[in-house]
Structures are given as structure tokens and as C-alpha cells.
Image 1 (cartoon, rainbow, N blue to C red):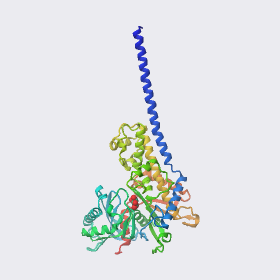
Image 2 (tube, protein in one colour):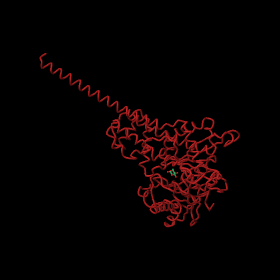
Image 3 (spheres, rainbow, N blue to C red):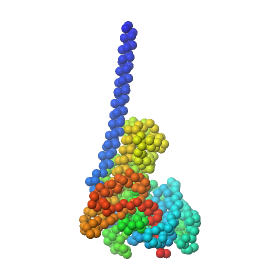
Image 4 (cartoon, rainbow, N blue to C red):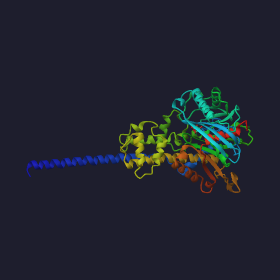
Length: 499
Ligand code: BGC
């Protein structure tokens, strides 16, 4: 080989070495970035840990805060609002009643005919109407006029005279799923908006009166006879079907719970008298807070950037409005600090771009190659080329967020049971018949629990884990579909002056 040949061979060897070095360097960097993504998920998982020990601390905190909220106005972040509902329906309600259910991005109008015997509903007619973003943030007059005119059209269409005497005023149950200070069963002022609503001139106003005035203006002969929270509607319907129902929980866009309390335990309203000695209390548990809640930097930044900072802390860890957004925040950080989601930093930087139903669909993708995850990333987030192992990591993030939410909601439920002596901790002395715990039913409604089976399984499992095997069989969580709408109609029947 001549000198030129030798030089060429040496040159090739150097080039090969250089390419190999670049490839190795690339692989090392890529492994390091993958390692960073995995480490972020691991840190997040640790910060979200909900051991049964920690859940029991949340249970205790919930029960303590309930006592504090009942003892004095402002005594706790739990408002523990009176509802003036002292008797729950029992299945004997009779006649045709209307309900209006406002609490999210849709509102519904319903007409329901109750048989009067054995918890039987004869007819159930519903119309769903979306609420535009403009109405959610406009004026109260616009909102209530729109609702009243939709209701009028519905009544004109559905009111075929069944059980109704013409020209007699119809009674309406109004489900208004926001914090309200009730003045009576049929009136109450809005304390604040949640779930993205912000109609400033409605705060401090009697929302039942606003609706009554709007109905009068449209020429509708109808009156609100029961103004209720969606949890209260759900408890009412749960009790209509099963008299062992003592509490209700909503886990949907927002979250909240209510339960039947003894009036003598409502210390902040001493001397409150009801026929039954009980009253339903609307906890507004979305605003619950405790240092035992496992809070991460992602929760803190979500709260900081929300329009209601330092408010609805429990809701921001649990409900459908926020779970997708927590996942998005984690994925965004992973995209920034690793290359597992190619070119996705920009797309993942948009708040609320990942809605909870999409997150749930990715979580529940059981195809071996996570095809649905890939499709959602491409179609909804415009992110393509995500490897299978990165998609698996993403599903793990969804799992961490959902599991924490479901387990915290479970702790909240057991907190209520503890407060009313149905968690078995008070022993034979309380809530037991002949040494056995009493059967206790909790009615549950809302898309996360009803429509997201992994969420529901995690929640049910955690309730059983916290209660233990002796007590858990006596506690039944029962889906109460459409409790908020039908429940308001049955309360209208129970509280109607025509009864
Ligand atoms: C509201 C509650 C409501 C819950 C579920 C919360 O944001 O404050 O009043 O019950 O959402 O809809």
C-alpha cells in the first residue's frame, strides 16, 4: 500500500471513530433525558402518595373541620351550609313537577311524574341546553332570561295536561350547584361562583328570586319551591329509593358533599328547630383544606394561575375540571426536560388543552400498543412520533393523578361517616344495631365516578381499605344517576304547597 492509501485508511478510521463517538454521545444524552423523564414521574408519584395512614389523617381532618364549620360561621374552610331540608322524600311523592338543573356548561330542564306509591316514576322528560361562555361570564339578567325562555318553550311543548289544572301555578325544583347561603327551602343568596362561572352581578343575590322574576317576565306561571344544591338533589333521590341513604357526593366538573345532620349538632344556629330534628347540611367540601393533603408543585402552580387562588383546594385535586390540567402540567415539564414528546413543549404549554375526558380515555386505553393514546396525542394535542415507552410513561402520569383524586375523595367520604358515627370507630355505642354496624348508603353522582371506571374502582377500593373488613360491608356507595335533576323535582313534590 502506498503512502496515499495509508493516509486514506487512517482518515476513514478517524471518521468512523468520530461517527461512533457522536452516536454513543447521542445515545448517552438520550438515555440521560429518558432517565430525567422517568425521574420526574417518580418524584411526582412520591409526592402524590396516599398511603392508608395518610388517608386516615385526611379522614380525621375532614371530621374535625366539619365540627369546626358547624360550631361557628367562618370557623372552617368547610362552610357547612344550612339547606332547610329537614325531611327527605320517601317514595310517597305524587304528581307532575318540573326541575331546572344549572351547575356546569349545560343546564337541563325536566318534567317528572311521580306515582305516589313505592318510589315509582311514571314519566321523565328532559331537555339539555348548552350554556355559552358568554352567558357564563355575562350578566345575571342575560343568564336568567335565557334559562326562563328555554324553560317556557319546554313547558309549552311538554305540558300536555297530565295531572295539571290549567292556570294553576306549577312548582319548580331549582338545582343551582354553587355555594349558596339559603334563607329558606326556596330562597338563597349566591356566595361565590366556582367551575369557571363568573357573573359578577349575581354574587350576593337571591338566585331563586332572579329566576322567579325572569319566569314572570316571560309569562310563565311557575315558582321555585325548592332551591337546592346538586348534592342535596342527589341525597333526596337516593333517599327516595333507599331510606338508608344519609349522605351524597358529587364528583364531576366540581366536587361536593352533603349529609343529614342532627340540628343540635349545628351549634352555630342554636335553637334551630325542625320537625324531624335533622337537617341536610351542604358541606361545600370542594373548599376543604388540610396540611395532610399530598400537594405537589404542579398543584401549587395550577392554583396560583387560577382565577380563584387559595380557594377550592380539595376540588382542584379531585374534580373533572382539573385532573386533565394537572396531567398536562406534568407532561409539559417532561417535554421541557427530556425529548420524549418530540416538539411538544409549545403544544403542551396551553392551559386546559388536555381535558379530563381525554385524559381518562388515554388512561383506560388497554390496547397493547396504546393506539388510543397515540391517536389522542395526534388529533387533540397535535403531537406525533411519541414512542411506545413514552406513551406508557404518560399513562402512568394519568394513573397517579386519578388514583390520588379517587383516594382523597374516598377519605372525604369516610370523614363524613366518622362525623356521624357510621365508620365503626365509635364501637358498639354509636351507629350500631344489636352489635352490628348499621347499613349506610352514600349516593354518588358525577361523570368521574359514574363514567370513569378506573376512578370508581380506586375510590371504592380506598373506602374499603380505610374502613376495614369489619365495617366496609355495611357501607354502600350507590350511583344515583341524574340525582341533581330528578332529585330537585322530587324535592319540589315534597315541599310543594299543592301537596
Ligand atoms: C360547587 C358545589 C357543587 C359542586 C358539584 C362545586 O364547585 O361549589 O356547590 O355541589 O361543584 O357540582
